[in-house]
Length: 271
Image 1 (tube, rainbow, N blue to C red):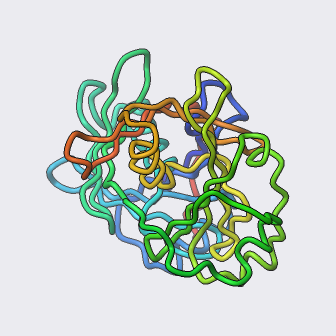
Image 2: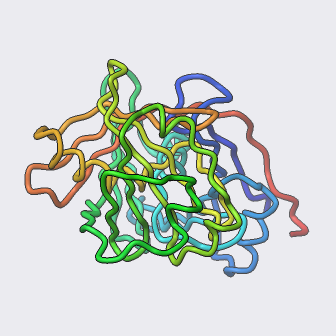
């Protein structure tokens, strides 16, 4: 039976912007090697694989071209967009996904935006900065370095520094972490802060727009700016904007964005 597959630009209001994701809707379970091969063939930062449960929710896994990951925002946004667009779930219905990071929920909100309900990822000040981290980022001075044990969050002095970063990716690959978020406050209205995300260790030198990174950035900028709702911009070459809202108890982060379908097709039955 042919397996439907889609390519979607997530956190984008027009084609060829935001972050492209693959979305593959399965009718039966596939092994990890098969999904990794498909993700490598799609060659976008993440491909999501969905399998429907009896209760109309979905099991979901995400793969980069190199490895499986535990949380991916933009591919979740893309997946919920496809489920609504194809009529797999009703437009007023929540999209519910069972993942390695727990139950994730997507909802349609005003003006065709989609809001993701994700776990908050508070970081703490790094007790020691890895030897090659700042060298790989080509930075001599930073305001702050935090970590959750998986990623590093680096605050720099200005938006200009964020936008002009040209990391040494082979050296950054040697830093013991999944990825590195670089951020600053933004004087450019309407945005509150800007960021970029680098993850060469998992096969993504720079991710265009990263939902999961904002699970750290939301709580971080809440502490810094004293508010809980933001408009954020990820300043990659493609670029993308999202709304970020930190829940009252700080345990959840709500990420809002749009998505555009670029192509759809089906995988060969012989695969």
